[in-house]
Length: 157
Ligand code: CUA
Image (cartoon, rainbow, N blue to C red):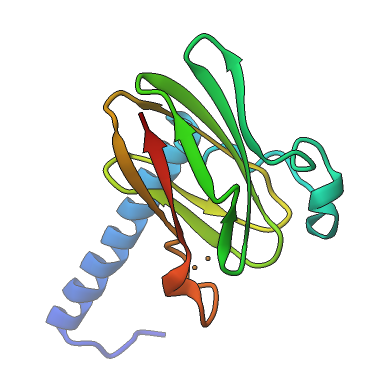
């Protein structure tokens, strides 16, 4: 069977399909060959039992070494817990995050920290805070009526 198509239509179609294939090859190469898949997301957790599951049974800021801190945090509509985080300037902070209900976002303004926090998964992300100041943390995944109020502050002193 021969499709009755105009020449230009045919060329346009070939261009479109080629671009699609090219994008898929680039994305596939980045994901598998360059290992640029989403960070962590390998560790799972029962979202119903977050409060009873370590390390989330003790959320907060924990010093784990010289200039090194661990922030264990749970996210739920519409709050970050712990609410206030204070760390000395120059510290490296390892965030360990999970959600107790729906998918939330964890974005620290002025840094490269931008993570999706999904229920059932443990998200880990590390950031060095060199300069003192107040860093605004916002949820950047729409999570319900109070989404726009979901924010906190990281105080670097
Ligand atoms: Cu949490 Cu939007």
